[in-house]
Image (tube, rainbow, N blue to C red):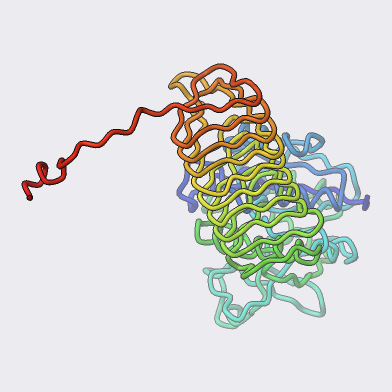
Length: 432
């Protein structure tokens, strides 16, 4: 790993998100914003510290699930508010310290390389914007940062500057150890600002270099509008990654794929698909407008308009349109249309007729349906769980199979006898 420590500032409330949830826990492509930046940081350094305050327990719990080796520091945001205050109790292991913001989910390890290779006491990230309105301006002279001025304090010449502060910094460890204890909150917000370190270091003649970064990777998320815009970018990255690995996508911009999804072999995704959770798709076709949630598909095709709900394992199987599968294991099955298969295990050679329902819930508990090999289930069949259908069984259309075991080789039939009431139509409508 590089000789660098990374500190991620994730203590803020994010009031502009207008949500009770901590800003950094808002989701992009199935994972929190903080997850994405933490994952990329760990590709750069094995010393990653996250500073938390608002909803600290929820943030620590969420991130620790995926990254148990990350260090957390709790900011005293009452006595030491602000970005400078967040750095008060952080102890970095390495001689170079990169400070990131937890609301920049589009950062990648590659995009951080410039901070590792630029030699200076402080490296300050900047954007070059055609319209810098709303940003603090960065004055650059002779290849070094001269000063930062907030827009409200800028004069006419400074307002014409197009270089703005992107909010990411790399410091020599000694810089932070020297200047963080000297920060003051004597300002309008009564906060300790990390940017004041820049001013103090410059006043002492230290070298501060700008690093031009692209807005896409260092885009901050401060509102639901920003969140949606970042989602668009993240989705394009995910789709491009998997198409480069050989996945075929029809109208890819209509397809949604979450961060944890994995594809193997030759896969085809038709338009309007949604694939979420830690789904694994191998040598399978997902047809138009189908949803797969946290499930495994092997050598199968589903859809169009199918719904595979979490904890399903589908192998060598055809799932047709308007079929819903939930927490079930299907191997070598055909379920062509209009069925619900929940909490079930169905074995090879079995055909599920249209309108079949596994009645898995009695209002209190869930129960399993087990169907053996080479079972023919007729249309409009209800299987009232718990129930076991042994191999080589035929179930007649319109049958309700109640709890118990259907023995191998049998026919199941439950229908009322059909009868005719002659002339009923004319009596009912008063016609002759």
